[in-house]
Image (cartoon, rainbow, N blue to C red; front, side):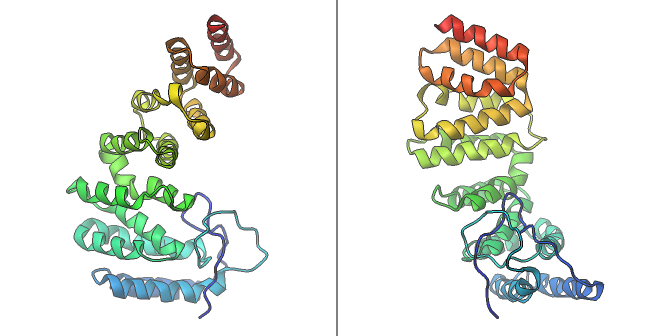
Length: 287
């Protein structure tokens, strides 16, 4: 079977190609997924079965010329969303009931060169109970290489860290802080992207903790991080413009560094007139 290569997905786990599959084929897919899940405790067999399934449906789902959002540079099968969604639905209970087997399967799929198996590995890791949490955090740290494809990084932040983020957020924020305070810019970029993903989770409530992580960069941010830091601030404005305005005022008053002033001028258009006026007064006071 020919394997398709090319760009993958944007933020979602799935390629935005629609699946037009007759009902009898959908029933067949469900049967095939059921057979695949039986291999859950045999990682190599599962990986082979998943590869066969992805190859089988690749040519059914992908039509050259269709608009596909730019995404991963890894080779991808271009399968329709329904396929991986069916696999994930069937795997959720297995991951929760057999965490050791789930970890072994995630490790195996993470070694795959293709985009979809790695996404599935991230999903599996995010479904495993945190008992102990170290098994999850160790893999997240090992998988989160700054040189990774950006879309895979986003899958780690949104999927692999899902239960850690929801059940032990302090541990997840500690990892993000380690990246942001690292001496290497690529690690800092990764940390800032992880922080954006965290801020976009509506269940995340520790905004003071996020501001605390970000505060040191407001004084010493390298020029290569400026655009990434601006994206984080924009995400903070979306979550809480009042708290973000207060944070920016504090940054302006606590240092003579030109960095906060430059960032504030860029973030001003996203704020209300009242908040803009407040920050402009702080900018004038520095002058």
